[in-house]
Image (cartoon, rainbow, N blue to C red; front, side, top):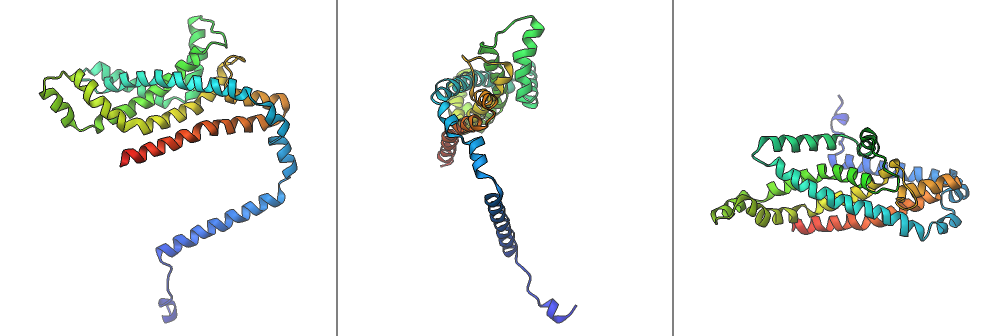
Length: 269
């Protein structure tokens, strides 16, 4: 190796990172230029942003589809939250059968895809039991979403309970409170203050998962946003209704995600 090669300066770690970053920026800019030059913007606007079809979606997409998505989300969230609290307490129980049941439930419903769970609960189970549930019924979809949400929120609640210092329970017991009273009055209020941000994120996920209910079959009474957009796409051979449905989802989820971020920041302080 020559002296000139030995003394040639090498890039530092920071310089390499900057080089990679600017290379990515350049590649992204080149891709954006290619998209601008080669996409048929007129056809794209006609097939995905047709103004006549945009105006046709309102106000029913809000008063019916978005309302129904919110109803599915609201009831399945609070039903799932109640189930999650029971599962979290069973998971921490000293009785082994309770712990085994809770752990098995959580593992199963966290492991199964939400879509498969909805199909089993909403279609497979009624057929197996010989029960005819009409498409306008809200129950199967809400129940299936709640069962999935309970499995995820149970672990969140359990983590919140374990985050409360053990001394809180010991101090309450030393004052003569029963374990159940101490858990209800001392531990759970503190735990829920800790887990409000992740529960808000779970609410956002549940709102998006409500789109899966369309596989059960819906009517004009209980149609939700995704099925609304899909029906409009099929009827008009145009993706504009899907785009509008997506924008309505964003209008619902973005404020919730910002609220969750703010709650996490507040909890951190």
